[in-house]
Amino acid sequence: MKKVGILMGSASDLPVVRKAIDTLAAFDIPYEVHVYSAHRTPAEAAAFSKNAKANGFGVMIAAAGMAAHLAGAVAAQTTLPVIGIPCKSTNLDGMDALLATVQMPSGIPVATVAIDGATNAALLAAEILALSDDELAEKLEAKRAKDAAGVLAKDAEIAQEFNK
Figure 1 (cartoon, rainbow, N blue to C red):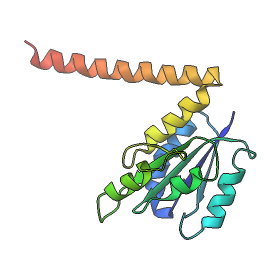
Figure 2: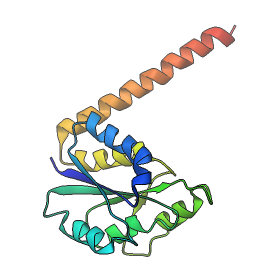
Figure 3: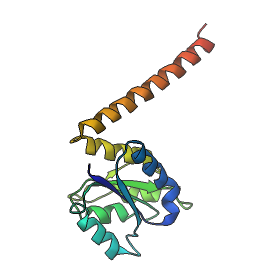
Figure 4: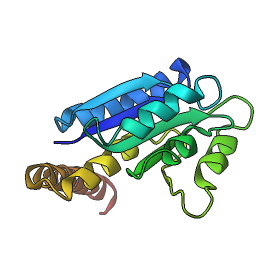
């Protein structure tokens, strides 16, 4: 199975990124995690991204806050799918990161999830990898069925209490 590369612009993004790590681990998807800044370590971020495909990666996840250029910087260096996680900051509550991540120029796409949406980033990465992995696709289908059953169980509880 291809690996997922997870980059974060700062170690302070780890509490958000940990949700992606945990989600990938739950699906037994291999991953690597690194701290590479688009602004402070651009050469390292570029080198990792340029070599990602040759090094066995199938999808990249990039998490950053504030100016949040990391996902775009990664996408500029690879044709692998890149998923951006805009991280919440104290100044603009993550809106700056969301806009910086989602507003990519034509030709350099970045799939973007919600602010601090690391779980969905990992699930999207899993869905991409599942296109060529039937076992992973089955695991994703089982998760969806389990999630649906959980919602229906809560519906039954609430209906029992309020629908008289």
